[in-house]
Picture 1 (cartoon, rainbow, N blue to C red):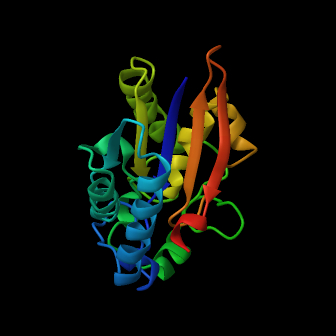
Picture 2 (cartoon, rainbow, N blue to C red; picture 1 turned 180 degrees about the vertical axis):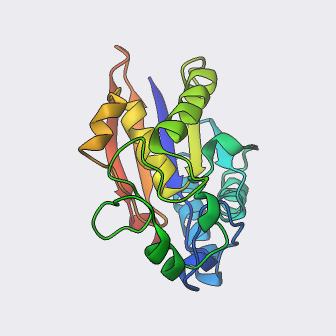
Length: 210
């Protein structure tokens, strides 16, 4: 059996200043730093007798979250651009208000940048879900499918939503009809049993930041 823990980065500046996240390199807020410390403290007690390898998006808000948590766990950390949030093209560096007014495709209700179909792109130069799926598939094949190690993955809402679907073996076409969304600071637990069945035992547990 092998375990995978995913962590959505904690509160960052773009959650408070009305700006788009994406590939803009926002850092954590003070509140986000405290949230990351809480996650690190609680995970260190929960998995103290288990060995994990940690991978993180190289964008600052995820990187800072991962560094704090890794410090509590006493483990090394590998950064990769494969775990970055969606690149939103011309919306990078813009406000969320700008994004609402300038999207070029239909989005899921209550979102400004989550296209309804897997091949739509909400802004010029943006990545589609299929394109992010493909870079995650490469990560999956290189890291997850070729090792039995326990993993901790620190990333972003949009990216993790696709990762969960990939982990469960869903066909990408299913993402035209469903979504596995998360919240800031959410911690999820997945495992692969002795028969190679893939299980999500907890999705987006927010108790770690409370």
